[in-house]
Length: 82
Image (cartoon, rainbow, N blue to C red; front, side, top):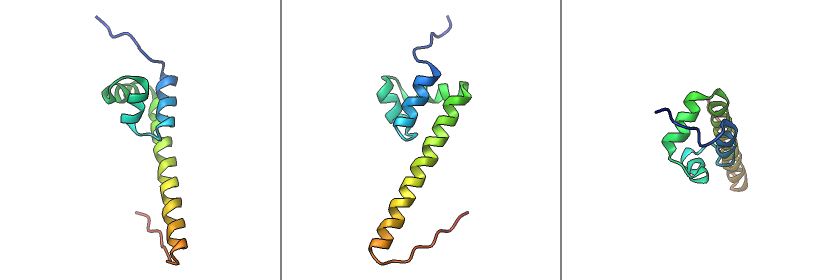
């Protein structure tokens, strides 16, 4: 028996954006398991893109806070990219 879709791809993508790409938080918001969110990401390009974009946005926010704290402390911070 095939699985029925409980959520639209848009709903899952929106939950991921609201959760900054954190799958467990998105799953909690949707009322499902993280495995379900990962399954949607595997099946829908739009969900995978939303997850990656949200994670990149979060990383940018974290970096901005780190640089701000360094500046407030009078420290010089140097970014090293890999």
